[in-house]
Length: 350
Ligand code: PMP
Image (tube, rainbow, N blue to C red; front, side, top):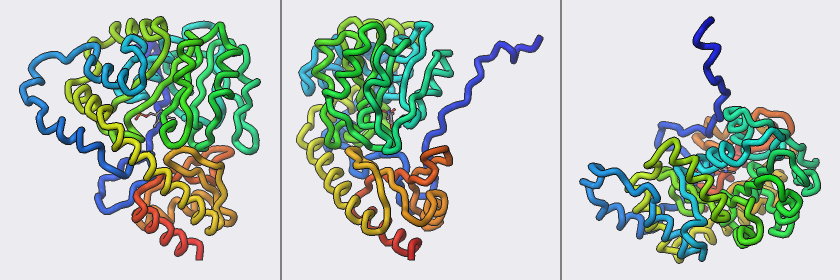
């Protein structure tokens, strides 16, 4: 018998490339093109060097309280983690511990099936329709739980709070996770529902709208019960998940909501302008409410455009997968970066 028979083998998630060159336009991993709030930089300047000697605050109190103030949610209904990937991963492990299948769409964040496989959670992927739409009734009475990204990724399609509530209402017996990584770009959060549905977990992130992808800060809202279960699981594997820098800088970001609003508005403006330009160039796409567009060209294949852009130092995301192989996911950059993308596309399509 080989020890390798007892290894938990997994096919890992493959994140978008982080190219080493500096002279590129990076529109492939949905980062924010603008810097974090000046309040974050100020907090970094006064961050005490010697703080590394001591263990950090296990509860990340400063960060949790800053989030509590912004969202008007008690601190014991908030969970923070090392990016929302960490929060979601732990939520899968903790909340989907039954024998039934967890349901999520076939076209959605491609980490969901990876976590399900990692934790040996049975799951079923439900096909979205030909317009990439999710149908709420497909998720009624899910045997093991539900995960919905809203807006969905990589399609960018936003559903209303009533649509999400319909799914939650029809699943009183299992946990429902709503991944709101992109909710700040024009969507309405289902956060108010956590007071009515104690099986609902709403997950958000500082990576996109708060320009802190590199700091790895994610957070979730839920009933006291659901948050307690997550913390029990967390503190059974790591007592100090968030380091002092994440806690201090993350908290600083939540203390500057004016800057946050301004950045979101800028990204939304760029997105709406990009929709017009891309349409004019022969692209079609679902009406995204995120910081990216999921676009397909009338003539050229996704692969061709992806490669031609890459040669010009412009990185977008492309999946060689059924149903979405002809699409490119284009993150909104600055207006200048987008103009360079449009110029390159005009050349490629000429
Ligand atoms: N959910 C969705 C739908 C995403 O696209 C991403 C970004 N890859 C995440 C969660 C995770 O983001 P982070 O771990 O940076 O918070």
